[in-house]
Image (cartoon, rainbow over all chains, first blue to last red):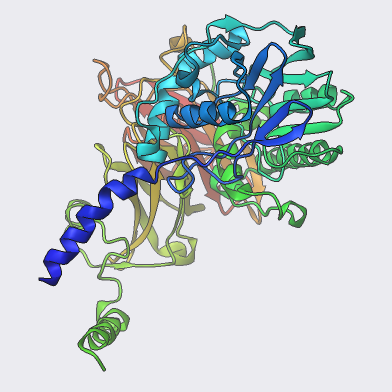
Length: 312
Length: 251
């Protein structure tokens, strides 16, 4: 009898468990016309549904400009509903800052709206989106149900674009993924740095063309006269601290990898290198160091390895 | 004392009893028995923390998972190290026979087809196998993924190119290298097995210092890290693939 009631309880709880897969998206106003949906600084996990990314939107006189769409079709739908609670204006433009899954996999919820990115971002998403989806389904399970890659249909060129009274300066960089768009709203002073800036969350390197490229991108980005910085991951900031942290962290990573290959360390040794105490507040440093060594170690090894075979 | 807590206490006694030490698989892998029979036969073995098998907790790239094995705590007694990935379609990774100045340490990259237990079994002169274990999580697919080497036009031109260096390591030295080779394992797209199957580290006079038998669970463009107790021993590395191509490097 106890077994039966247990089975009944399990059966009854099933639809409830399924219904719990809902993103609680509460847009927070961070500047005039400007709203943020701040994700956690955790890794992708079934417990967070992959809501680990910052998504923002600007309510212009011409309609809503949305910057990134989140990790899943379900997220995109919740995002669209959340925008609808803030404004009745239509969404006129969706921007994909870069091709990583947490920024573009909500695209399906905006299939009736122009979705735009850098040309290279579309190429990269076409090449790698399927593999990203496989991995996200593995990590997030049912949160991803129905999610498919929807490529952006429009191409963004760097330069200033005025939309509904907001002068949006579009800046093309490459340090994070090979094609990274940052958006500076000259009207409000808000800089949407996307994943060129991680703050209090370890940066990720799977497609970076090089840490040096990323550092020089940051140098250009930091010169913008912003009053509020929205990083791709982590809290917003009014000051320059996120740039200082990024430079410090990238410099440390670069130095660590250089020293490790120069000493002849193998990859596992480099993955276990100590992490400086000053980065203690940054989330996921060990996890991302393991990933970064996987991504970049061969490139650093190539700088110290010599040709040692007899050749021709 | 309840029945449950008595059971727990009994379990604890059994687990902590020396009779069981080195007998029960710490990873509780379903394939342990199969591979134990296959690789170790009927020889005595123990799970031994002196065999340090290191891998990242997860495979960021299932085609290139770094593993390193350090059995130097077993000293000069080591005659062979056999490594395998328990749930791989091709489980065997390598058999390594260090001699003389070559330390019982090795690091290289492997492919994993799924999350798997990894083993390094170290045979000592007394005929006992000492087994180190770890586990790697993975999205998988590393053994059946299309070759990155073959995707590059003109890869044949670079076949067998070896890049590497010797590094000082304490009293001795360390050799690290990467060989350009697709290490085809026969599991992807009508491409037959084509892999480096044998390597020997030799002295200046050509005498063998260590030999290594490789299997195509080893990643393409294989990496290798070897450690030597002498600063300049192991001047030559010889490699041969299963098509008979021979490659040689000088350190």
